Image: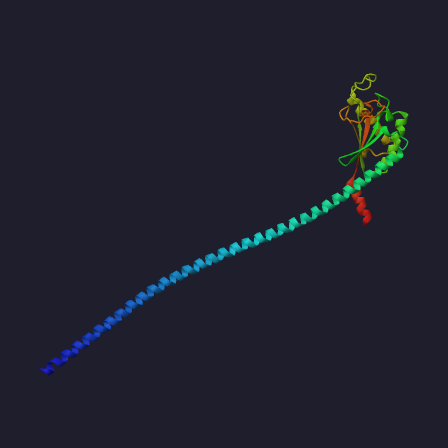
Length: 267
């Protein structure tokens, strides 16, 4: 009986061993399959992270490049604004210097004219300064007979004297402006239609004589204002309108030309 059961027991043990081995192999295969899937999943996550990182890096590089360009542009703009500020400062200094030179030139011209007309009655000679211009006003009796535009003999001498002063200042612009009072023209209506006509004719006459005396035409302009520009000055013992019947010489020294001469002298 004992000998009969021994092989059966051995057979049973072999079967159990094979069964266990199969279970271990199956477990290993299952474990290997799970690890492979997990690895693949992790690899995909890693690749996705790498791709996202690469895109982010490229975006940051692009943003950095744009920022560098903006910084370069801002530096260029800052340099341009700095240069403009420096030029503006130089221009302001030059303008101030030109203004000083112009004021000095106006004072010089005024002194020369006063010296040239030292014998002329003061009521007939007036100086005003307006908008950076020197205005010399001569009443009509100094230059003309009433209601006429042809220079008197003494008027020619006055214009010749002015020409001598003006020729010393070749860069000065001269506006000769004729004026009248508000009285209508009567005795010389056959010559002049109205006060406009008379005022312009007087200015043109003075300019022509200045030309004859050597003042360049390019320096001068003739104009008339009839009775529109009142001086508002009443001279004692004189006709109340006498000062309105006048010729103005609006003198404007060329500040830029003066400045160029000044700079040339400093070199």
